[in-house]
Image (cartoon, rainbow, N blue to C red; front, side):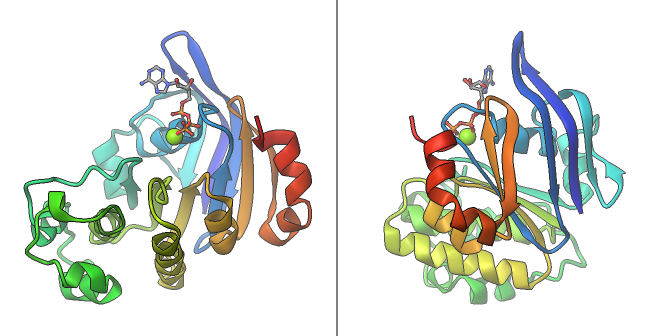
Length: 231
Ligand SMILES: Nc1ncnc2c1ncn2[C@@H]1O[C@H](COP(=O)(O)OP(=O)(O)OP(=O)(O)O)[C@@H](O)[C@H]1O
Ligand SMILES: [Mg+2]
């Protein structure tokens, strides 16, 4: 289980995360939603160690992550798919996957990955720059999976993707869940968020102001949207 407890993170004097509390059960999907700039990416960056929390705890299976360097957090089983995907444009699909820290005993071989992502299989030798946005997103997820993570952090994977591709992405996220991996998804696209979520968290100004299982969220979606998500 991922537990975030009273997390405070600053950028300079900017007090961005102001006591975040979250729990994501092992093997489930927790989705964090919220308006632009409230601190969603900062929460994910705090988990992977790219932002340094000033206070609070983040534990994965009781293993404290705060204070560890990103490569050690990755070793502890956390994979990060950043906003914007960060695919190497000059490397091929296969090379983009191979540059990830491939654990020798990973349950994900390249051939198993290409089965999960048939659109990548068809483009194996294409360069990153030649892929569509959707293919780049799948590649970014494939690159994270080959590290055999226990927890995967996905920051706005639907950004810039056509509705049909977002549907495909939802399928992939559900298949990932079936493999037992825990997923922390930041998502502005509520359709995708509620299609895959077990639990929904809403952030306002660096604090979680609402959280509930997705079925409860769906019953009060309009109210929550009005209160916390519309401008
Ligand atoms: N490296 C940084 N240095 C200084 N301020 C930053 C930095 N990164 C983010 N911020 C600020 O921190 C706040 C939270 O940013 P964050 O990226 O976590 O928001 P977000 O909820 O992910 O927003 P979005 O929906 O736009 O992705 C914003 O006010 C942003 O301007
Ligand atoms: Mg963000």
